[in-house]
Length: 373
Figure: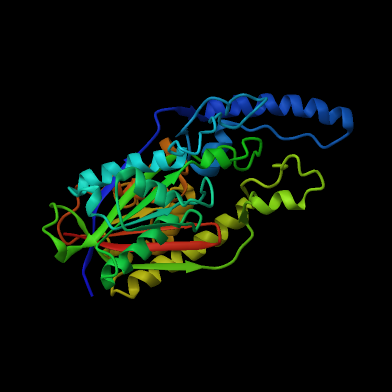
């Protein structure tokens, strides 16, 4: 069995920014208009949002988005991303290619020397042709590619699969690309979720340690793991069968079919499951949380991460032990933990352990125990 490492990491974060104040102004403007309609029909009025609620509920203060236009328009409240012709590079593939090129550059590897691409993301632009195969073609790679999804655990799950492909010798180098255009699937008229997400793309190159002399400071993958348990508490119903359930098939109704969650249940149940996964996963390798230098956790909720770590350590831990990027990027779905890893690892010493751990809808949890080389 081959020893395996992450030899390159690439991140693409869009320039456009939306603050909490921007979102609240847009949302409340829509609520004012909607409540006027509801008063006329006798329906229950909607509650407004506010920035204090957003920061308390999530820790998010702003987010980067692929396309700002349209999101803050109370009459639209969704990004305006024009359709592209079939012979053009798709939006999602283009986003992924940007992070992929940076990962390859970081690794010092030519695209032609990568034999597999996995596009692992919470949402995919289309079922086929696979986005991974489109990325593979755009980068000039040969070999194989496929898409996979496990909600916000997708990048960790993709890393799990890639690691085992390389460990067994089935593939030489695998590129795990995670382009998260999640604002395109977000209901900006849902007070419980309209503030949570932002867009970002990441990529990781996974290859054998024995294959070549890797650049200094890379991370060996000691082990990876994955866990799932069915839950409806985070769900989307937006898919191709939605049309088939409508009497009027001329349009697909989106209300109630975009991202939705039962926030209090998700918080409680994922906190417990995340803590248990981390403790058990580390124990399987003779480690306790104290023996891990850094935790790169899913960037979904600051209070959730703090509670998971407090349960694991028995006391609170700060940014140095478990860095957060959530406050400025929002929840970038499966990309978040990888961004935290990318931005917070250069100061680690040779032999230090680090843990990537992501959790999300499903429920699903994925982890990777790393050791700095």
